[in-house]
Image 1: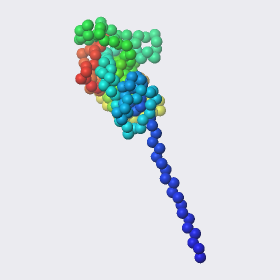
Image 2: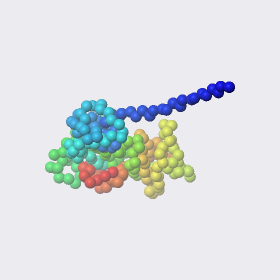
Image 3: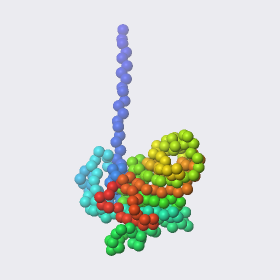
Image 4: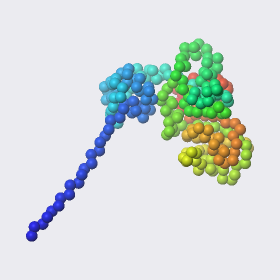
Length: 258
């Protein structure tokens, strides 16, 4: 009697590791923005495993060592970051309503806080962009930067940086309203990240957020029957607004970190 043996061949799936654009990898590593990466690549200031690359679109594996050369680091050191005390009535972004003045228009030597005028005249303000929004009806700390690393750190979807606000409100908050503000509200069908919310005094709340959706705090307050009468951002990460007067600005120090 013959026995029939059936041999089943197990298919071994091969893990295909794809190469990724070097500019994207540099951005993911937090070394620069993609736009900056392209500029550095064109200048020959990026290396992959120690070898310079100069062709845009160059790809590499995640396990390879991707670095910026000293020339790129020198350029980064020269990039300017500004801390502005934005007044009410100014928009943070140029793509907002065009009939209002952008906050960047306040970055002129006459408005610089506690610095020698000659220091400012040597600075170039071209390319400053807001790292986060602060709506026209809100005031306080706004960061404008030429540095893609800082922009990514502050406004990336997974940014770890806290933003603190003082919010003057009117209305009656229900018994569970404070808990809802802290955790449990949704905007545009998406659950908000947990927030720190507490009373500062009888008509002012303190919010600490790790995200910044458009008009987020105002909309959160509306959901618990509160009206926002005034909103001021007083801190971003480790940096507070401090004593910068309304409408004035200062340069971020080399040793300051968010």
